[in-house]
Length: 217
Image (cartoon, rainbow, N blue to C red):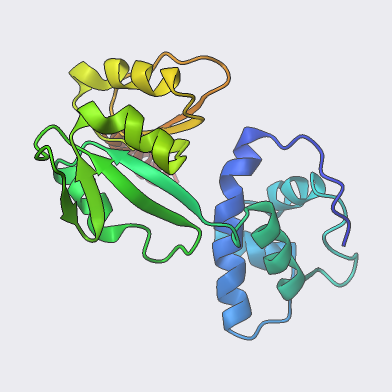
């Protein structure tokens, strides 16, 4: 299987973990090979998009045969670094932060929250689900000590940029932002924002649009 990888578009990159998860399910069910049309049905996206996504990684399949499931699972495991654990920090242990700590990526063996920060934490720190929680005054010291470069941000909006500026100053590489604030960071830092209100509005829009289309049929 060729591993000559071109520059991968962001839309394709966002689908890679989904491909990996679905292919794992096919492998666990005993399926040996799969066509782009079968993947299309499972992914609920068109087969042409799947073939275009896969083309960025060279020849992943064979004409007339399709794709070898075991080979694809192994390939995406390497691409997504599934065999190497990434340790991340959580900043903000309110309702959402607490839920994240309780879940702590239980179904993922390559990602784990190892430290958290919250202004309600006592000076000596405390634990929740075996994760140490410290006061934000200790944030820079602990993050550098633990060599963490990816954080999950679930702080109130009013302090989101202030906290981000502190993270930038110590060289954090990535932020998963659960606040509605558009964070200002250097180009060297990647921010992915998950805005629940936007996602909900988008969902409602598509539902209403589907209803209108069905009425016209």
